[in-house]
Image 1 (cartoon, rainbow, N blue to C red):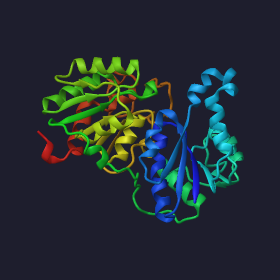
Image 2 (tube, rainbow, N blue to C red):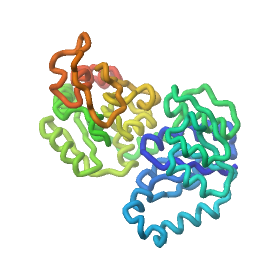
Image 3 (cartoon, rainbow, N blue to C red):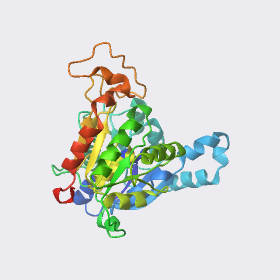
Length: 355
């Protein structure tokens, strides 16, 4: 059976889809998947053994030249590939208008969320078959249920299995020091843990014999990483790394501390001990998912607000919230101080590695 998956972005959403492929392969041993995904994330689907072919989509790049899009040879090749495809089913696992439009271009039976289960309701009209999936579940479990219904097998009750051969990353590098990886970058300003908190946590980590390692993916993130590292003894700001290189680094870090970012979900997929920090976002719905995951959710009454803009005024400070709530931005992170995060790190790492 040949199935095409449409899940183009973002990094976290792509990773959340992997356990559904493991379920499907276990239920239907001869199933094969092709996967349409944004070119920046092409490495991820290829890590799963059930994926035969990854089809890169350059939508973010093509959008910059919409006037010449139909004359773009790369775009024309992509369209021909879809129209000439031979699939038994195409599953839109994203549920957006852009993903439904891609799904509709494929000459095959299509499946996706129904009107009540989808993020952009108009997209549900594009599918031949629509399925109801509860919003009360984590995103990983929603996708697992969608695949089970679309492919007609009983959803397994087992823990999510991302299907990644973690050993492939562990055997390619070896570090002779204890390292803790800081994932400080994310897309929303409101999801950024304060720099002063990263610096204070870094000094705590370094004081207990660990080396802090930082990543970056843009000029702004590089500048932030350098500022954070500047006040932490022996901290390392890595060069810009590919996703596979980041996976190797994660597999050789004792623990990962992360804000709500796609790379945090990669750490979870690799089973790495992770302490994830959530202010405006909801760890119950989209938090890191799997083994060795510690979540710290801000406890201000407004959290999680799911907003890219902070509007908290602090008119009614709830019991237990200190008056210095506005000492950092966004204020909800004032409830997740570095000392609390360090306590969670000590819980996350194996006792034999503690100083």
